[in-house]
Image 1 (cartoon, rainbow, N blue to C red):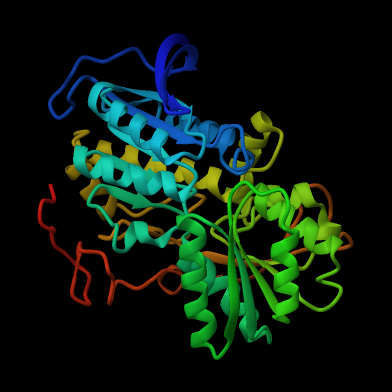
Image 2: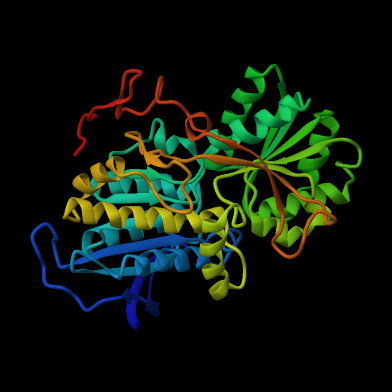
Length: 427
């Protein structure tokens, strides 16, 4: 249903109060509070870029995916209603952190889902830790969330900068792309991706000739591309996402970089990016993804449901949002409570079993582990029609795709076996 609510957020240094219509899904009548449930409802809040450069890969499609997960659980858990709200965090860490704290403290929020932007995710991670409430990340790339910044209440779904490097960077080095130059977004995700990809390239005998970091969003990549071209690197690695990636690839083609022999590696690439670029421009790009809509019968069936409402196929972020929210609700059901720590424990006990997660499970460091797909974008001649974009090259097992627990910087990991331990002050 639609209700009018007041929302406070920061803009230009001032606190702005808006009265807006917000879609709040109460899919069953409120149930009476029961043992283990604090107020008779399970409340989920989702924040993402709804109108800017990541809105196509996350945005309204992620909202729909979360609603689909709630609907598939019957709209309630053990008789307690599931309530859902969403907002646009505008890719700003301060807005994300302020709203998360408000949701947890006065909104009775049990779960916050952060669907885009690493800087926003890192800010919310600290708020969730302090409030001892669960937070899930479904379109956030920085591997720091399960490394030095890991939290007992934070879980990262789908991918991270480590998995993207192990897949795409390793494959291109194996194919002869030994020298690299990076163009990356100047925030946590881009910095983390360059660090992880550099380790992979150098470990395989390659070299990194340089790296440049750009503000986001960026509409003119000419100076960055010209410096990458002048470096003579065989591979230009793009450590950005969404519209920034689309713009960079378009301008690289205009400058003739690919025709001159340099290869563009889009280390985070979405099916909607291919759709926006067209196969003529995007063909041949190697990518790593945990999800492709046309991979098997289960992915096709869920994606068709999504397409029927959005008129486009889902991205890996949108599919992972469904998976994460559904798994959380299954954990609430199994724990017979919405209290954060029992639910978080159940999230690790239960396998992640759905169309999205291939052999999925949640580790102690908050890393949801699933198999990854190495894919290549088809040529126009190979494609059979709209959205038929990927050729799957191989499956990368989850244990090989993600950073091992041994040697982890996460304080929740004790020793090489990855046994859980509580850091000072942990709930």
